[in-house]
Image (spheres, rainbow, N blue to C red):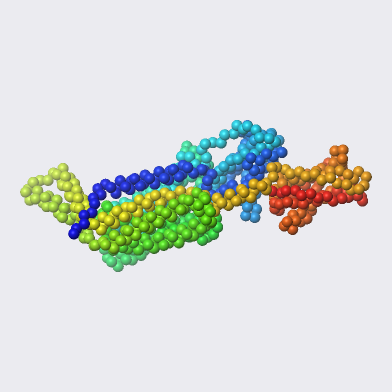
Amino acid sequence: MTATAPRFGRFPVRVLLAVTVLAGTLLGALLAGASPAAAHAALTGSNPKDGAVVATAPKEVTLTFSEQIAMGDDSIRVLEPSGKRADTAEVRDLGTGGTVAYGVALHSGLPDGTYTVAWQAVSADSHPVSGAFTFSIGAPSSTTVALPDEQAGGGLVGFLYGVARYVAYAGFVLLAGGAAFVLLCWHRGAAVRPVQRLVVHGWVAMTASTLAMLLLRGPYTTSGSLGDVLDLGALPAVLESKTGAALVSRLLLLGAAALFVAVLFGAFAKREDGAEKKDLTFGLAIGGSVVAAGIAATWALSEHASTGIQPSVAMPVDVLHLLAVAVWLGGLATLLTALYRSAAVERRAVRRFSTVAFVSVVVLAATGLYQSWRQVGSWSALTGTTYGQLLLLKVGLVAVMVGVAWISRRWTAQLAEVAEAEGATGVAAAEEAEEKDKDAGTSVDPARESQLARQKAAVATAERKRNRDADHERSGLRRSVLAETGVAVVLLAVTTVLTSTEPGRTEETAKAGDAQAAPAAPAGPTEIRMPFDTGGPKGKGTVRLTLDPALSGANDMHVWIESPDGKALDAPEVKISFTLKAKEIGPLPITPDRITAGHWTASAVQIPMPGDWQVKVTVRTSDIDQTTIDKNIKIG
């Protein structure tokens, strides 16, 4: 009994178009919904803290981040309630011992009120980060500061940059995967025009998207304004950045890829001698692998894999992951093209790709498992962070693809070999009609020749479709491969969004840093008072000590000694020490300098870590009368 396969007509094209539109919509929605600040280096602390009210104006504002960032002189702006700049526009790197911290000095004589701190930087994995918070001097007040709607990494520029990244990934998949399919599975495909167009379109898409990313990179990491895209003055700064260097390297490698494609579809496709073709296959495989690995490395060297833990391991793993994705998904797209747009692909080619796809999925699973551990870090981050949720969605899509691929393997096992001369009968009929015209002595005019050519093409196409649709096994394989490709389009969109989302490990680290920093940081300078009595004449009084900003690191200390009536008491000698008993640190001796009668000061007093420190003050009021008093002070 002969099985009749369903007729598809334009169905595959419509389905692929619908799936592509769905992927674009999903990509746009996810990118539009992402906050510009929700990228990869997170703000873990600040001094003053967000919402803090300090008694006196701080000398500087400091920010602490979860990982390395790039900042310029205008990356931190402190604005007065009136909107006037309150900072000196000179950002300083304050990081020590692995801590990533930056600060900007403030002008003196700042008025009371609410101040706005706006910051913007580029994280180590190339994504822009930005944010803002407020603090108040004296008491909160109204403020006229309005931050711009267009921020780095967001808006229309952020959306276009995300689309360009998606197109670059898709182009790489088609370019590398299509070429790998031809070399590993189907040598005859090098001469098939639809396959050639597919690979060339992948190269064009990747080249165009890389150029677009170079132009968009400036406003993407700074103003966020689309009008700045054509401002070539920002291009030198882009080219000096890590991402700019990666994009330029990608363009150079695409030039080498163009030569590879020309040889693959030129000399390789025309070569008939078996031994020569085998040697050329080996050379193209080696050269193509090097070029493809180099292109994949442009992502690994500038994005997630280049920062965080174990970057020396993560970068080569990321390259393997991208190559496995390209070979699997690109080969799938090439197989779909061969099944719908060309003469039937041979059974052995489909079986070879089935084996290649299986190996790719194994590599994909192994490298993906490592990447998941590195970027997520914990079970709570897997379900409680945006990155973890997107990762679960990606794993689900891969599982669906593997399930559909299993169905494809079943159809592949049932395939029968087909003759390569499909459509020969129809074409022969058209040619026979043309010969009859010639035998009859009728001169064939150009219009008639054009009509006959169209007839021959139509007849050949109809004949191929009849033969194709009559093959039940290949119809089943086409349906399953079409379903795989549809899921792959959505999977690639989710992967693009995933690579621009803050890793779960970083997000949880930032949350933990906020939780730990919240109770520790005081709201500005801390003051303690300690009464004393040396036992001699004029030996009674009060020591008033202030520490600013009362945080670990450098502090300014002032000491005032007052008599019981509130007047300055000019003691001959004052000594101070700090001890952290919980960590057995100290005593750390400090000898302040006398400024005026009853006033001593010391700058850059180094407090090595936060905690509950004991302050001991020794006061001498005469040659023989002195006493030591102590009190605890909280250091944030």
